[in-house]
Each structure stands twice: as structure tokens, then as C-alpha cells.
Length: 438
Image 1 (cartoon, helix red, strand yellow):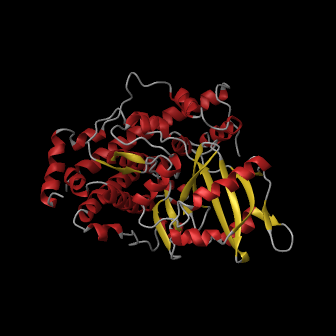
Image 2 (cartoon, rainbow, N blue to C red):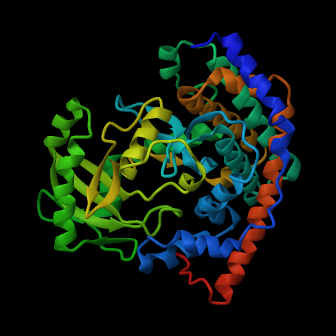
């Protein structure tokens, strides 16, 4: 590895190729197609009967539309200048995809927690999506323009100063970094407090009903939650054999001690609606020791058409699981992957102390505070998977990148709102079928 001074210099030289002010620019290309057509096309491999529910959830607001329109932004980002520095990107870095979850040791962690779109790609793509999400979230919460801009500037400043710090760390020290400073009386503290209540026992009470003296079964609340047929049940059971082999040995033996008692189909999130998603209820040491697993279908990343020079992806669930482990400091011990009927699935615990920010909490200074932590978290993930020195050298010590990203985020948030209006008109005209409130 080159000395840090040389890697910093490499990053600084890249500014002659793509200046930091170039990241301020956004204008749709003349070749940019109809955004509604792009959204419709992205649903091609999903369960057809569930797509209207996804469309309905995207219709709830501009931020909800943004969550479901990652393929649209991926195509737009691909048209912009790139520095050439790659990391493992989250691919869907927005304010609600950072949150709290339980570490294997039981304490709560704040980190990126959604990786459906993860691939090796340009670090600036994650930064631009996160920046845009801050503006859209701020607007939804009723925050003024100047505060939204300041939040993006603060997030970017946090990203580049954190990257400079991480570039000086030994690799083993960097691998152990957790973002835990300054949480008291902040939006992050609120997320952690919420996550403490999301325990397996709380999930048992929320999603199941008693079935006899010492067992439970899932509620039937179609279309959001419903039991599967026997063929699907058998396929899920069979898939657990290969899933178990993707766990660390110590967790293979723990998982082996749990018995599967029920399987249901569950609709989750916004962007994921329409994929095949199963929830499993297992018990270990009695009815007071529940384990909930989610077996979630993974489609190819929406960034896959726009990244080159990476190895062919043989299993989409493995892609997500490995990307998550690379970017997070600590990960779900039951994170793995499997295959059902030739479709690829990620396996993870369902809602184990997992919580995300409520957009209405991001008002005023709270938006700035949250942006600051999100910037540090994203820098940590990128530093672990790319050349922190070169990225830090490119970002520099001035506010040039901060200002550029603030301008871009405002412009792309405006673009998102314009696309959202076209989407709503398409629903009104019957071009897009949407089921609201599900």
C-alpha cells in the first residue's frame, strides 16, 4: 500500500479530472426518458398482484416516491461525472435506511441497515442520494430552505472530515469503528430509544396469535400478512438447509436448536413491495424464546447496468449479505442467504431491535444533527471498503464539496418532486394502478 501522503495526493490530482464544483450540477439529459415508464419497467419481475400496493405506497409523498424510485436515480447518477474512486456502495443511502439494530452482544448499534442495491461503485453516488434525501425529508417535515441546505453541507463536512480521520487509522482499528458519539438528546437517541422496544417478544405479540398451550401462529391480515400454501412452506423449509451453511459455525449450532413452527408472506417497506418476502417463526428454549427470520427475495441491483469491471454476480442474496458485512461494523449473526425455486433470497432476523427515523422528527436543528451523524456513518462504511486516503485527498479541507452537494441536492430534490407529480397524474389517468393505504 502506498504511503498516506501519496494516496492523498492521488485524490487531489483527481480534481483536475472532475472538479469538486462539478458535483453541484444536475440537469436531465435530453435522452432522459419518461420517469413513469422507468418506474413501470422496474416492476417487471415482481409479483404482479402486489405492484399496485407498491405504487400506492410511493404515492404517499415525494419522499416515499424517492424511496421507491432508486432505479430512476441510478440511471440519472450514471450520466454524471465520476471521480473513478470506488467503494462498496449502499446504493440506497437515504435517511430512513440508516437506523438502529441489535449487535450480537445485545447492545444497540446505529449504522446503515438496508443493502438491497449494494454493489462496488462510485462513492459519490451514495453521498448524492443521501444528500437529496435530507432535503426531501426536511421539506416533508416543514423545514425551511436554508436549514435543508445547511443540513446537506453539515452532512458532507462530516463525511469528508471523518474520511480524513479514518484514513489515518490502521485497518484493524478501522474495522472496529462504531459511531456512538453525541447521541444524547439527538434524533439518533430517539431512534435507539424506539429500537429498544422492538424485541422478539414484542414482535411475537404484534404478529402472532396463540395456537394451543405452548405455541403461536402468524395473524392472517391479507394482503400485508398471510399464510403460505403447503408447496411454498415446503420450499422455505428446504431452503433452510443451505441457508444454515452460510452462517458462522457457532451460529449454525445455535440455529440448529430452533424449531420452525410457522411461515407467512409479508409485505414490507416501499421499494421492496412486490418481491417475494417470507417471515418465519421459530422457537428455541420454549415459547419465551422466539426467533423471527425474514427470507427476502433479492433482485439484481438497480446500479448493475451502470457499473463495469466487477465480477459476475452468481447469487443476489449473497451479494447483499456480503455487501452488508463489508459496510457494517457489526452485523446480524443470522444474516445469510438461500435459494427457493431458482430465486435468490437474503435471510436475516426480522425487526430485532430495528428502528428508523420518523421524518417528522427531522425539524430544524434536528435535521442538521442527523445529517452530521449520517455523514460520519457513510464515511466509515466507505473507508472500510475503498481507499480512504484517496477519497479524503479528493474531498479536501475546504467547503467546496459541501457547497456543491448542497446545490445538487436541492436540484435533484426538485427533480424528484417533478417526477412525483407526473407519477400522481399517471395514477389519476389510470396509467398506473395504485392501491392506497396498504
